[in-house]
Image (cartoon, rainbow, N blue to C red; front, side, top):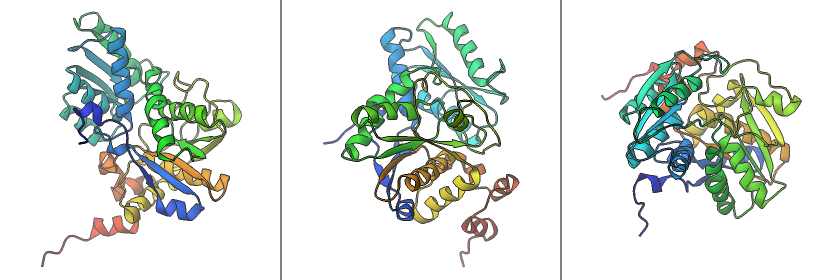
Length: 343
């Protein structure tokens, strides 16, 4: 019998999916780690679990306590889910620009949701800094403790991928993985998987797929944090070196515009049945670039971070796509203009 004892044990051990069209196009084996199959429906479930466990082990949090976090959505959803399962409460601070679907999910999970204007990290009213102040205030009054999850600079986030995601990829590929690439939000996934794979194979190629508007492509190519353009992606894109990124070296940096990532995303849905969020489009586009750089015959792994339904009101909205100058696939145009015929 294969039975998981509660939702916590259902986190991780997600399958690798061969991405047929990307693989055929490049002559490589391109594999996506199906993180959308985690119980909170994203890769962030792993970080949420490790951050909360770490706080419990250190004694800064006890059952009945409160976890506070600033998040673009998925980490907050993971934290709220794990907190519910462990008998704790959550306060989530989110930029008001994030998708309504993610906000609705957080409220359904019982989180106290605080929406704030989206402002740069340097601004004291940035959502991350607001969450830190709330946590500091609650820590003085909550009898069972209150912590700031601080996913960007809490290396328990990275450790989740050192201990779980990286070893899973190694085992699932039989050690035959030539490259790993993904985008960065906190840096925990990329850095943690890189550490785990390099421990087992020092010459594995580690890439970054950076959306427009983020600064890491510039950093890993010139040594200077600089950004240009913008992206519709949520939860990825970083303008600083977080604690989770410290010490990470990148072999293959790529900058991926939405005009490249979004068609890849729609292609995965139309031809392979994978309904994924925008970050997965950036990741798969990055994997295709890395495969072309390495040449045919290599095995490349990337992350399929979450479901596209979490962004439905924007990602699958022709009007929104056109307003951003992005291509609308023919099948979505037809769906938008032709109603069902029940005759």
